[in-house]
Every structure is written in C-alpha cells, then in structure tokens.
Image (tube, rainbow, N blue to C red; front, side):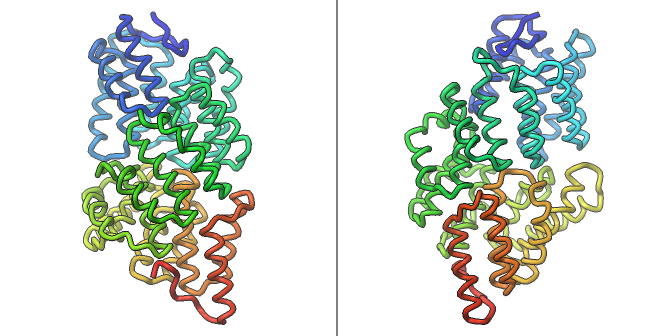
Length: 457
C-alpha cells in the first residue's frame, strides 16, 4: 500500500499511478485545468482504483449539470464494483458512500461522510477541500469555517496542503465577516502555495466586502499567474476584478473585461453564466447599455431550463432568459421549479421552495417592470438567500435587485433598511452602489413621492 502526497494510504499499486493521483489532487486544490487529465491518467493506469472513481463522480456532480448525473452514477457503479473485489480502506468506503448519498439527493450526507474521514485523519486535504466545496454550494459558511478550523492543528509547516488549507480558511473567514484575518491568512497561504487561486480570490472578496476597489485591483494586478493555470475559475477571478472597476465607475473597463476575459469563451457552465449575468445585471442597474450581450447567454440558458441541479444556477439562467426576452423559456424554467417544489424528494427540491421560488418570482416580476411584486418576492427570498449557495459577492446581485425594486416601487424605508444591513455586513464600509442608492432614497423623500425610475431605466 502506497501513501499519497498528503500521507493518506491508497490502494494504488504503481508509482506512475500514484504520481498521477498526486498531480490530480494538487491540480484540484489549485482549480487547475489539468485536473481531469491527471485523474484520467490515474484511472487508465489502474481502473479499479475505487477512490479515484468515487472522486470522478463527485467532480461531475460539482459541475451542476443534469446530463452528467448518469456519468457520475456510472463512476459510482465502478467504485462500488471495485470495492467488492478489491480490498479498500475505510477512508475509501467513506468517499464511495459520500458519492452514493449525494447521488440520492442528500449532499449534506456527503458532508457527514467527509467529516468522519477528517475526524479520523484531519490531515486529509482532499476530504477537506471536497467538504469545503459542497458546503459552499449549500451556502453553509459557518459549517465551512468550523470544518476547517477543526483540522488546522494537523497542518504543520511541512504539510504539503498547508497553503491550500489557508486559502480555504481565508475564504471561510471572509464569508463569516472576519475580514482582517481573512486578508492576512489568504496572503500567507498564497505565499506558501502561489498557484492557489482560491486563496487569492478570497483576498479579493475581502476587498469587495470592505469597499476597497482600488486595493482590490492592486491585489489582483500582477498576480495573473496565480489563476492563469485554472479551469474556468479563471473567468471568475476576472469577474472580481471587473466588479472593482464597476465600483469605481469605470464601465468601459468592465465591458472590455467582460468581452476579452469573462466571456472570451462562450461556455455553458453555470458558473460562467452566473459571472456574466450578474455582471450585466449590475451594469444595467447602473444605467449602462450592454448592447446585445444578453442574447448568447439567453440562447444557452434556454437549453438549461430542465436542469434543476442547483438553485444558484437556475436563478442565473433565469436572469439570462429575462435579459434576452425568452418568454417561453422563462415559463418552462418557472414551471419546472414549481414542479420540483411539489415533488419535494431531495434537499435541493426543498431549497427550491425557499428561497428559490420567491426569488424567481421576484426576478420575473422585475423583468416585467412590476416592481412592487418584484420587491415583495425578493424581500421574502432575502431571508434565506444564503441557502441558494455561492458567496456574499455572488448573491449581491439579488440584494441589489431587491433594493432597486423597493426604490422603484416606493418602499423607501424598507430599501434603506436593506441598504444599511448590506453596509453593516461590509463592516460599515459604504461602496459606490450603496452611496448612489442612499442618494436616490434621499431625493425621493425630498420630492415626497415615489421614485419610479433609477439609472437602469
């Protein structure tokens, strides 16, 4: 039995397969584009490697695409078959069972299996990162932080995964409001693992949440090598940079980054769609003409109306469909979301009811200029919006749409309350959006009437 780069026992038999497996894990931690190639090489050398097959299935589920569920199930079958005729470790059994219960619609059950792995071996960096990733999808920032802090003692200076752990810790700290610590830990982690794009982007999140756009641009500029090796995560880092330029009112730079980096490849990955739709929505709320950029997003999203894998994805597909005026596709997506809620067979179905349906109804109403209905539904969804997954920065587009709907519908007190709560979450730092909307609310009160138009109109 050979141990991997993190000291975990494996059932791999050859040095070549072990090297590919180590390369796969390191690439996964760095969000590297080469991750599937390394995993493929591992399984080509040793197709009965049950852990590798289980991880392959989980990688497919993390993509949030309904057509890949069958492929993930095939990987589960291969992992289970391998475990029946080849000795596997208790750790491998947990990975296989984590995939199985996730396939059954209970990602929280997968987390439980990874936590058991980490209880037995807190230095297991692969289990740490997978647990972190699933908690992120579920919007569980508190659990994300607690999980990492339980294992930190196992990561001494000589642990190969120390820098990546610190990157995950930095992100969890940022998502739970400890911005100064997050910045420090993220910078330290990147010094140890210079290819840790997740840690680099955690620091970018801090700059976003503390309204420090200038500092954020300075942080990312010149560090492109830290995300150039990435899979489509590199588009997300460019998205963060675009947000900072938007806060400074540099919309020409934002549109250039959108065209040359964020949507340089017209992919249909939900994470890329979310980058694009949320950025276009922010631009339009600030009165910027985005031209025909909605069209290709809407065409792609019209093919994803039956997915139902993630609320976060569905809501961004809906933004694209609304932006592109795809009425039939909007109806299909809304109908499927209602059906998922009625079915109520898995954790995602239950989340689809709240916050999913209320948020979707609010977005649809906003697109129809029915701002009262939009505000009432978005305000209702706002209470549980974190459960849709993603980060504060990613969900902020829904917060902005809620506030703008409130202003347009004349709910000035409520909109101001939401703005103040948003600024409070940012440690009291008021960004450009908040300042502009507070000025609109003040002007609306001075005029003793309802503001029916904000810059987007």
